Length: 354
Image (cartoon, rainbow, N blue to C red; front, side, top):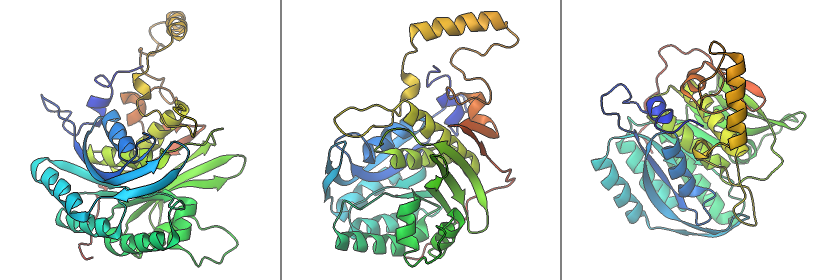
């Protein structure tokens, strides 16, 4: 398995051409998760795993285990503001991810901060809030829609979550497409929406990055025979880190899909509840038998057709490597991710009104 120094640093750092590469600083604002399944723990591990430096803003804490969320304790908005401004005034942050921040007051605080740093791309993740009281869900979603969506570059969420939130009056017999949801988000100022878990036939789901007018990146995955916790935080944090490290949006999305697929494939069950993505899968030592088998195969194939140790063969869904990560088509799950060519692609400026 490739080490972070041989693969991730050169691949993901926006300063990789410098003599002394430095990881890109990625600010993540989220709730602490004491189980380690999701929340800020997932964000930090993911950002580090793909080669960034995690600048973490604690907005509160879940009270939960790996099976369910029981409650949430929110920090006051002044504490959140002071954390974020201290970090932003010191560190060269390249991108911001906003997860579950716990209260309308914290949403307002972060909306003001992202408005002040309008040059930075913002990835906002909306998790499933069904564990919360209905009135608090409504207050949170209303504040997020009014204050943070206008500051958001990419909105990330599960198909059913975004459908209930953005298109509550949908009347068609067919479920809304990713472009339908992107159009609904665009009414609130969001240029791009990443919709996950779109149901497909034969136990497949599709993840789609879309604007109201086009699909920028999509991939179909076969469902795992397991229930995961923390996949949404992992995907959105990876996307944010890759954008902050210099990838354009379609490429970053494809790489994030690929990374998540590996994390889920290596997932583990640390407690009595759900499976957790292994965000550091690349650091696991290879089995000795697998290593010997690989060496024998490489010897039989000869130098011309062999694959260097620690790298996946081009076009495979194996180890993340500079070759597979930089490819225009990335094999992941059971199908390929199609990345359109967008020469001159740039993120639009934020609407700073809120």
